[in-house]
Amino acid sequence: MSEHRIYGISFAAIYPHYIAKAERKGHTKDEVDHVIEWLTGYDKDALAKTIADEVTMRAFFENAPALNPNASLITGLICGIRVENIEDPLMQQIRYMDKIVDEVANGKKMTSILRTPK
Image 1 (cartoon, rainbow, N blue to C red):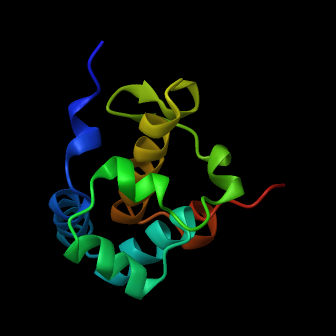
Image 2 (image 1 turned 30 degrees about the vertical axis):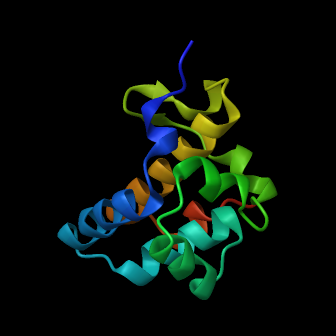
């Protein structure tokens, strides 16, 4: 079975779409960066370097400094699929990022987006 196409796409190709989605709904690049940094552990400089280097989505997550241990608290639908039920770990991480960027765009409170255990 061949690898999913998104794994080979550069993060730099997807990132502008995240920003555009948030900005269309009155939110900012800084908010998007904040949730991506929370999820992956990249800081602003490292995030900028991954964009400049056009790393693939696979490399983006494989080289993430520290995936947030609370990422598994991200639940819900993205593209009609429950993120908590995705079996492929890399695809799940990508969908976690999609989900939290959607939540930024939809105006969800940052304290809710950045999951903390109850």
